[in-house]
Amino acid sequence: MIPFSVLDLAFVTTGTPPSAALRNSIDLARHADELGYHRYWIAEHHNLPSVAIAAPDILIGQIAAATRNIRVGSGGIMLPNHAPLMVAERFRTLEALFPGRIDLGLGRAPGTDGVTAVALRRRQDRREGDDFLERLQELVLWETENWPANHPFRNVAAMPSDVQLPPLYLLGSSDYSAELAGRIGMGFAFAHHFATYDAVAAMRDYRERFQPSGWRERPLAILAIAAVCAETEAEAEHLASSMDLNWLRRSNGEYHPLPSPEEAAAFPYSEADRARMRKSRERLFVGTPKAIEARLKPLIDATQADEVMITSAVYDHVARKRSYELIAAHFMAGTSGMSAPLVR
Image (cartoon, rainbow, N blue to C red):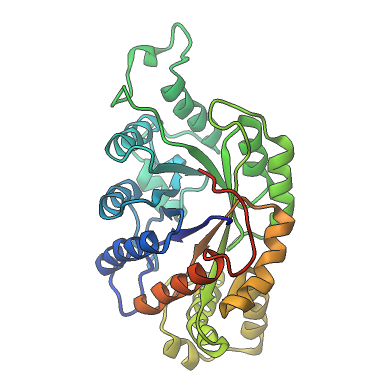
């Protein structure tokens, strides 16, 4: 059975304030654990009205404490926002408290707008340009302790010092992170749900460039998709209309909480709006379990994905839980016929 996992953004809706969205995340994680999902990853965003998670490491600890079996991690920690030592210590602490259940996914982007990114890094040693690779190298050095002999950090221990970092994954939506993850031998998660780059090409590049390392002996490629599932096509379309309007607004530079299907139905779309939404549906899987399988299985086969991770922006929390429940019953109970070994 190919593993299925959850990517959660703690969606803020027009009827759900951020604090309630965070509590919904813990409830959804318990549900996913009971359903048998493999991982539960949460994303980091700042100053985004539709996403409540700004402190993913805190929420990871809360979710891990509220669940029993599911792996819990970041999808991801936006490394430009954090000192690598702090990331190392926070995730070693999580690994110490929940051994064998924590993942550390890393992203290159700040997960916010430019002004907020400056505010996040204002008291750090701010560098011009993209310093992700430098920060990643430093994070690795906190784990390996292979500092140069004269490096000032050589005598600094990342605590707790008797715990290793959890498995590392690079997140990406282009060829850069795919190739980098392969070269340094880490896991890779591709964000098909918003990427314009071809998922098949990214996954192929990752596998072709993969070099065994101290992190992984074999490649592990996760395909992250957006899906809305319901008992009928009509109900799935009704629920997905929230995502359609949310995407349209974001593409126009407008950021709002996730609207209800009723708000979406009342929105005065132009013909150009509807054409753009139809185009965006190429990245969204909507329908009954069988309808989703008909579109998803060819993509899994083409990308050779080791795992599928699903994000679902559904306005109603109960309906969102039901969407994950239907997917689990179909894909994880063996009814779809897809099989693969379980991966870490």
